Each structure stands twice: as C-alpha cells, then as structure tokens.
Length: 95
Image (cartoon, rainbow, N blue to C red; front, top):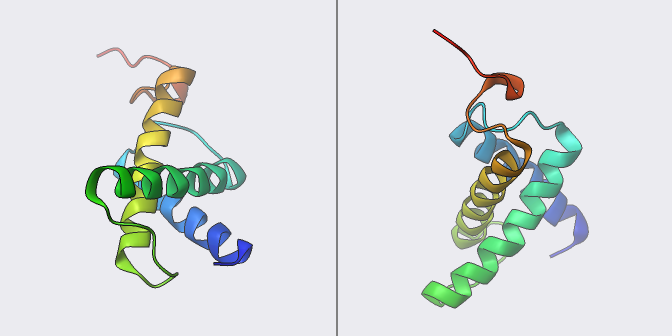
C-alpha cells in the first residue's frame, strides 16, 4: 500500500477509535492520524501473531479491523499516560 493509503486508513481508524473511547484523549487531527497509523501497524502485527491474519489491501476487512483495534489500544494507552482516563480535558468531574 502507498503512504497515502496508510495515512487515510490511519485517519479513519484514529477517528473510529476516538468514537469508541470518547473522552479518553483530547487529540488533534495530526496526533489522531499518527495514532491511527501506529495502531494499524500494531493491529497488523497482533493480527499475525495471535490469529495468523495479516493486513491485506486497502479494501480488505482485516486491514480495517486490525487498524481500528490497534488504534483503540494505542488511544487507551495514550489516555493512561497523559492522565485523561475518561475525564473531560484531564480534569476530575465531581458530582
């Protein structure tokens, strides 16, 4: 796949991951894309390691699933590292 395809997949996978984990991280479009690309690589590696399923072409379902799962993992880790674990903008909400 071309670098443009990886960027597009990363951007979409990053935004899907943010939708799955709302409030976890306050990231901009560039960091979201980078997390999505890295998540795609992580998801592809885990897919091969655990299930023997590799990343296919741009339109392959396995590519998208691996990218989204990897992005969710990285976004969760990012949220834990930055202290944004479900709190709006890193601040604690008191009832």
